[in-house]
Image (cartoon, rainbow, N blue to C red; front, side, top):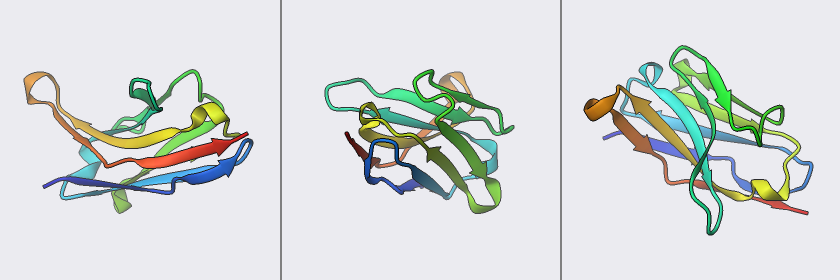
Length: 119
């Protein structure tokens, strides 16, 4: 079965950087749209950044110009480069893979990785 494995989270001071990675197993990675979501305590899960199978990227307004999403299809991996981190970026970050649409959409999630930004 499909598995998404995130890594790279941790504790960093405000202004610092982290790079998250998500490796996908048992899927045709290049066909999937990939995304990073995050969920802070007491808040709803929100989209941070997404990248389509065609390499088109989009970002939440709150992270534009600070975060960069990329993918390496040869390594079945999607990355999230996070710069100039702020305390409000503190959350559990989840990797997401999507393929297809409507009732036939496939949707997979990783287990999450904690990012904590201290002020």
